[in-house]
Length: 444
Image (cartoon, rainbow, N blue to C red; front, side, top):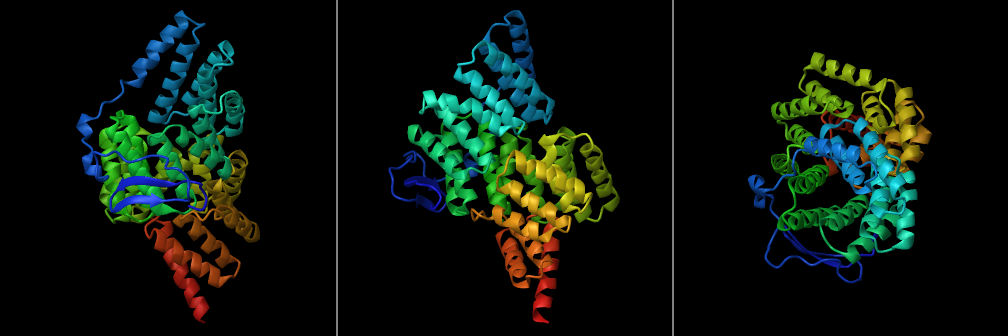
């Protein structure tokens, strides 16, 4: 691909035997005992699950109380807090993980595990620059530390430093192949608009994880990531199936349930989408998920129930901190509510992690505030890698329409709907309406 210096990777995927990149040695080879990736290979009942996280937290809390000078116990407890935060949606546990890792870091400041653990806790709270300050000394001493390379690459992606991310992730993949390395290369392909290559790599990562007998949460993550990629290219059947299997493998994988709701809505199967959304919100009442459930109600004419969910989001937004800036700003901008608050949160988000998603959201919030020239500058930053995201193109179409550039508006709106015609239950129909309006204006 144009953005990576990768080579020929032999990939076992549906209809694809290999994807060729620019000339360099192969990063990995496909297992010889497999012929293709197929989600039906996964037997959800046979995947080994991790023990309950709460029990582990209780055990290691007791250990650190009994042995407060044990850095390894603090590292393990911090890791358990991070896992439980992801399972429950309780953001306070990220701060608890940070405190625990800081204790380990104080005990052994030169220990890579303590440093990387603290960096991961900071990253979970979107403090990527601070995390990098902890990771970079590890790489100065040991440039081949794979965990540090992957953590640095992840931080670079969050910060919009994509060339550095590619360097770090390629270096990690060169040192050792495996699902984590493959998935990170896939993400870079996706960001650069190479959707076929990205899907092939994500499929191969899932196949690798399955053949390596990955634990339930890990395998479910790869399946969920595939479900997300399939959704963004408009393959709703594949998205729904991967999300279903991911959730069957690990019911702690709540993003899989969110993707199932999105895919079912795009298929027009709203009863199933709402059922999944209601289960999700009951388990994890995050503002983003509540707003998405409200949109499903609105799309099916259940306006009073939609409004009830929207009011819940607005109430939560009063006290939500910077970790929730992106989903709250997107909700407010999508629904044209509190535009000043939407812009404030979008500006804070783009300062904290200036990647293409942040620039897209900033553009959308600027548009809602009537600042169309600034919105156009921001959306061009979001589109600079060639990422194939329907919502990016939709926002661009709306922005250029507001600027009176009918040709560009039509082009962007057409492309948004070509990429993913059901990208959002409310915004996709609006994209169609505005496209027809712009076409009529162009014809007159």
